[in-house]
Every structure is written in C-alpha cells, then in structure tokens.
Length: 412
Length: 119
Image (cartoon, rainbow over all chains, first blue to last red):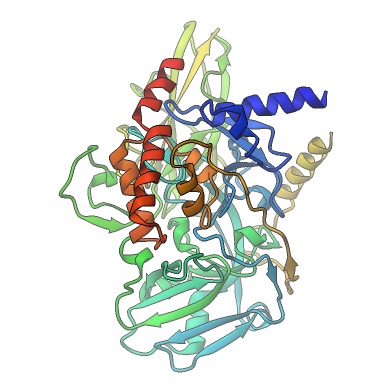
C-alpha cells in the first residue's frame, strides 16, 4: 500500500516536472502530505499543483510556491459561502524573510514622517484606546487568474483562487493619523511590514496611498478577520485593509507608517505592479508605446461555483446555477447568466448584501433544452454600471483579469 | 472522516460570524511562534543546473520557476534581468547566461508545443 502510494506520488510529480528523469526526482522533497494534486486545466504548461496542509494555521491549500509562500484557495471553497474561512484565505508573500515568532507585548506600530508627534503604538493601544469597526472586503491579488492569460505570461501562476473575503475588524487609519497629527503639505502615506528582502540591496516591500485615500475613514488597520486574530501568514498581528483595492496594498505585519510630503519613489510604487493605461488595461501582445500606471482598484467579477467546466447537466429539466460576484471598488448591481454563449442573458437573484466590498451570492434556474455541449457565462455589473467585458483582458504582466467567465457543460 | 467533521465545523462557523457593523469583541491578541515550511528541492539536473541552484534558491524555492509556463528565450532573459536589476540578485554574467540557457532548454517554447501535442 505504502509502495503503491509512493509510486503514485512519483508519477504525479513526474507530470508536474514535465517528465524529468527519475534520478533527479529523488532530489525533490515536497512536504510529505502534498501527494494530493489539483488540475488547474491550463493548456501548454504545468497544469497540476500539489495540495498542501503543511503551512501553520492553514488547511487544504493549492501550493503555488513553497517559499516565500504562495498558497491558493481551492475553488470549491467559494461555493460554501461568501466568507472564506481563515484557514483557507489565500497567502502571498514577496520576500521570504518574515518572522514566525511575534510577541504581542513588544510589538510596536510606528507612525512617523510629516506628523506633529511620532507614535509608537502597542497592540493594547490599538485594541483598547481607539474606536473599532468591521468591514467586509475581498482581498484579491492583482494577478488573480494570471494562469489563464493568452498568451501566457510570467509571474505567480494563480488560477481563480488568489481572492478571499472576510469581515475585517480594526481601527480607522484616519484615527491613527489624527492622533499623530498630519502636518500641512503631507501628500502620501507609505506602509511597511516586518518582511525584509533576502538580499540587503533589494527593495523592501512598501506601498503608498494618497493622504486623502488614507484618511477616507474606510482604510483600516485590521487586527482580526472573521472574529479571530489574523493567521501569521495573512499578516499577524496587523495588516492594512484597503477596501476595493488590490491585495498588494494590504500590507501584512504592518509595523511602519510614514507620512510623506513628496511622492513615494520606492520600487513597488514607481515600477512594480503596473498596467497599461488603456480601456480594461488591455493591449495586444507585442504592442508597445502605451503608458503604464499602477494597479489600484479591483474590477467587477463573477463566478459560477456549483458547476465546473466539463460537468454534465440533465437535459430538459430546470437546473440550479449559483455563485459569487463582487463589484470591485463598489457594490454588485446585478449578475446575469447566459446559457447560449453570450447571445442572450437572464437576470439572477442576488443573495443578501453582506458588505459593499465583499462577495455577494447569486443564484438562478436554467433549462438546457437540447442534448450536447452548451456554454454558460456569468456577468457582473457593478453599482457604477460597469460590466465585465466579453473580450479577453490581457496585459504583459497579467494583472486585473476580469473577462466574463465561461463554463462548458454537456446536457444529457 | 476527520475532514468531514472539520468541514462541518467550518460551515457552522460561517453561520455564527458576527453581523457586519457589529465590531468583534476580541480584546487581546495571543503571541505566535510558528514554523513556516521552507523547501530544499533542487532544479532537475542538466547543463546549467548548478548555476540556477546556486543563484536562485536563496530568494525563492524551485517550484516558483517550475510552475511557470513555457516562455521564449527572450522572455526568460527578461525574467533573469529583472531578478538582477530590480531584485538585486548577485548573479555573474556567466551564470546569468547559463541560467537563461537552462530555462530556454527546459522551459522554452518547444516544451509548450510538446505539451499541446500530448493533449
């Protein structure tokens, strides 16, 4: 039995590695429990990933990268409800050097720069001396769904699971800035965490917001998600929550806030995470001469969660479709379903609104009257009347993909 | 069996979540001391494997690369250049060439057409 399992694991690994020799397989040592795999159904490249349960405070996750960890939420989790369990909230780190050992008594959050008074706040200060609030918000990596880019592009090969929704609890960034007293002339606020680059010359991971955005009353310094302290890999003890904006801004293990009176010039603000300044951030492969701008807000998206590509659907009888949607930087106005490849659309019924920036469930019934293949599509329109595009969003770095999703089924 | 039980607990947990707008009563945080797994996996052997093993694994595990799609030599050159210029990887010009050769050989465009042909 053991031998059989070992052989099966080797064969699976062999497929992942593209048929490398057995001798070199012996050098591979993934976590012992990572024998289960998932097929991400992507043509022309490694399609299979390990399922891991080896990371602290994390359940079953898709192993995209061991170190620094990229752990993807398995897609079936999104069919269970609008809030992603903390132990399956996706994980993404830029640099491998971050602590596993955090003492809550000695941890301090510094607020410095263009302020009247530099602050060094303890976690007790933050939890007990400032007003707190809750907000539901989707944390989505700017590169979510990059693996489906056509043509393929380099970067984290996320399928659709580098997104997760939670109810975040914390204090307003505005209140913390007010306590420090922002000086006139401040234009941006820059955020840093406990993570450090391995190479000392490499750019520390930092992101900035404009002073007005930082003081909008919604940007949060979060100390809890779904009623519990943050898992280490999701940024314990504090992370920035920027509702409606891409996860790259949600700085984890936040310990440094710097108010700036000049534009931030660090790599991650000026060079990294940039998209073409074109409609839907889309260009043709090989196209040049477009301006690049930073990724900022999320765009509307929707997914069918109870029917997967290739599934069979009974012919001639009503079937249920359900899933999740989010509006991006505003709420969901409507979600429509097409059962004829996008020629016609029918409205779906939205579930309870559990927060402007969170996932919203949708459901409907549909009937496929003819046997054979059919193409289901789902489209979210947000409260700013922005709908997901039907054409393929593409840019060289694979950011902000939000094309209408297509699910092929067979009626029988 | 255990997984079934855990799933049930997770679903119940969702139902019991506090309503948005009603801030959670959490008053203190508990210190953490956890081990985050690393990976000691190496790149498959072959010409240039020493260069890629010696230069790339300090910052990221091998699966970072092995999970990438097949890319053209030019695209791999661009990736290696980015690691050196943007992320300050201390790679000698000779090693950079060996790494690009390794990637173009093991994860080049002919690999993509092979993969497509097998489907």
